[in-house]
Each structure stands twice: as C-alpha cells, then as structure tokens.
Image (cartoon, rainbow, N blue to C red):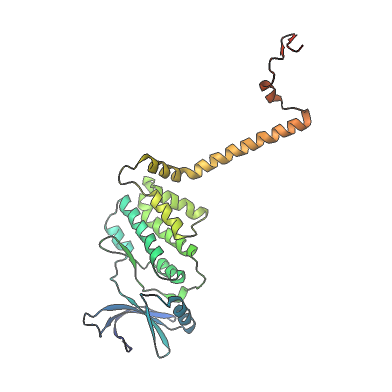
Length: 275
C-alpha cells in the first residue's frame, strides 16, 4: 500500500491497527535515501479527523495531509521496545524502578500532545523503554475510545496505575513510593502531573545518605497523613474541653477544675487566710 503526496512517497511495511475509525501504518519514505520510517495515522471518521486537525495544528512532530476523502497524520517512527517487556527483563532494583517511573512522568509532562491522545497512549500502554533507560511513546493507537473531554487529571491517574504496576514488586519492601501512590490514588487521586512528579520524586528511595534536612522532608512526606490525624484528634479534644468549660460557666458560675489554679490557699483547715 502506498500513500503519495508532493512531499512523501510512503510505502506501508505493515499495518499495526485497522478498524472502522482509524488505521495505523508503519511506512518507509521512498523519497528518503535512508528509507526513513514513519508512523502514519489514517483517519476514516470525518468528525474525528476535524477534531484531530484542530488539536494537532502546530505540533512540530506531526505532519498532516489528505488523500481523497481520508485525513492522514504522520509522525517519526521509533522502534518498539514495550515498557512491560523490557522493564521486567532488566530485573530492576527499587532505585531503577523509581527512576523509570520518574522518567515516565516527565515524558507525560513534556510530550506535545493533547490529553485526549495522551490518555489513549497510556491506556493502551504504547510506552517504550530505550536501551539507555529513557522512556518514549509510540503512536500506534486505536481511536475507537477517543474522547475530546479528557483532562489532565484523567491522564495523571491513568499514569498512576502504570507506576503502581512497575512498583508492585517492591510492595513487600514497603517502598515509600508504592505506599504513597497507592494511598493517594484511592483517596483523592491526582489533578496534575506536577503533583504526581513531586510525590514520586520525594518518595524515591535514597541511593546514598542525604543531609538531615532532606531526610526530615522525606520523613514528613511519608508520615504527614498520620501527623495530620494526630493534630485533628488534639484539636477535637481541645474543642471538647472548651465546650465543657463554657457549659460549666453557664450552669455553675465557674469552672471547678480551674479553682486549683486561683487562690488555692485562701483556707487551710478551719483557718481562713482572708481578713
């Protein structure tokens, strides 16, 4: 199968996705002497094509053109090195796992794609791990579940699920990163990738001894929920004491247990100290 324009003569090597909404082809450009490869989206749905044109306009990694009644979007191709396969293959340590997690979050933060497409990449796990340990996405995605209503929060929490899968082997070690992500995911989730990055980075197991200030910040981050609960209980106890004192003042005209602090020696036995 060929896709020919004034700029490209693309020969499809194979088709990775093909359904009623879109197809994804891995192509070589015959106009390029090196046989440069590309990932080509063929969008069959006209409404979806219009939305993608609007969302991807100005994206430096994407070239778009039409042939007949079909819209096409062209991206640079990178070899497939699925994160799930190659991550397990390196038998990572906790530090390796957390470093890979940080790199995945940073890739999500820096990629020039709308959240509607990023969610498809994350949910379909089009995530790759390079030989040098960097993380990158490929674009072989199925658009049947596309939604233009996707927000950053949706993508961040989808990413959390992937991070927890990566850190799950270290759950028995009580890895701080795993515990923090797991607790926050079910409590309230994440609104932004910045929040997610801060938690993963802060909880990262130290590869070396850190200064006392850094270790204290890490300790506080790990235990802040417990500390806030203790503070809440203390405040409730204090509030209860205040209420008791107010009611005692209203109904008895004084607060009995405070009398020991005021004039405690006015009377000793049968003798009074008052003249």
